[in-house]
Image (cartoon, rainbow, N blue to C red; front, side, top):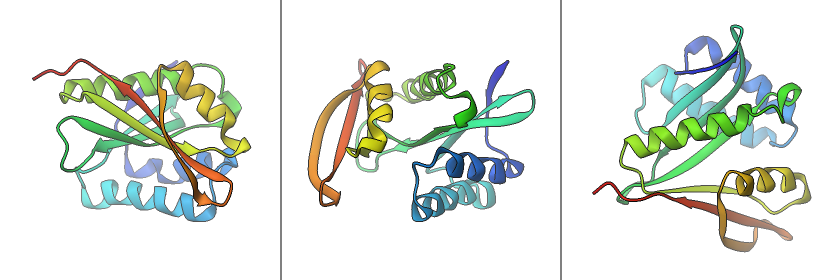
Amino acid sequence: MIKFRNIMSEDRMAIKAILEATKHFSESDIGIAMELVDSVIKKHDLTYRFVVAENGGQVVGYGCWGEIPLTAGAYDIYWIAVDPEIQGEGVGSRMLAFMEDEIMKSQGRVILIETSSSEDYQGTRHFYEKCGYQLESRIQDYYKPGDDRCIYVKRFEPFY
């Protein structure tokens, strides 16, 4: 049974292992992800929010999101990763729905998710589209020549 909870310090190594196992993230990507994890675990940084997916006491996924500075209710989902052993079983979509609910509780009105246009990320882009996100922007050659930055968006009714 999958349950969602807040991040704890003992989750650090499991999160890193999941990021490495997906084979989608470079060493520098994983380094940045772990800096965010550490900023919350060690410093209690409130800029970023985390959710951990747990199955039988084992961490099987995590997500990270935060409000975009200088906006009224716009949020970024920075990271979402699920153990490759259970990808396709609905954990990612349930975790994304959990993050969306938390964002709406915080009067969020729009969510942005950034990803790569490379072939390796085709499944990721399909996942976002299946979850109701629309490709809003594509910046050519952003990451490197031939690798565009794709920005997906989902909008909600404002609560103001």
